[in-house]
Image (cartoon, rainbow, N blue to C red; front, side):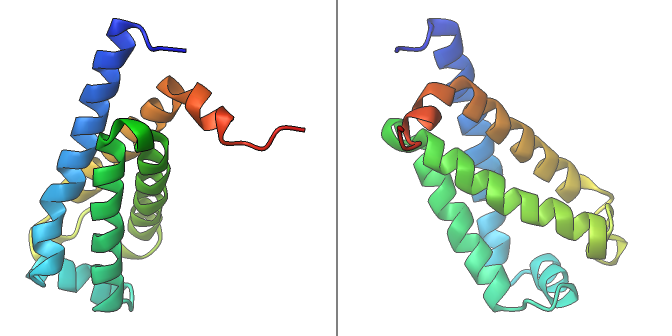
Length: 134
């Protein structure tokens, strides 16, 4: 079933917001910026966690923008960002004053999480179609 024009536009806005946020962090991850190195050192995952999460975010960004793979991109971005949120809540803290962050990274993670959930709700028929039938 096709989405209404309103849902189609909403989907594109949500998907674009998710992809832009994920893609803008790649520069920091792939260039070993001080903030990224601090985060992944604190988590005990430097450098492989930084690079691996960057690759996963790149793949999620591409998948969420391609019409045939929206659901896969939303699921992958939801998985990656859930890890980031849990890391903030358990080890990093909401704000990272050591690198000049006052909670912006956590707020962006919440935006990506919310947008990914909303995309999955909008595309729930595609998601349900992936489940095996009895």
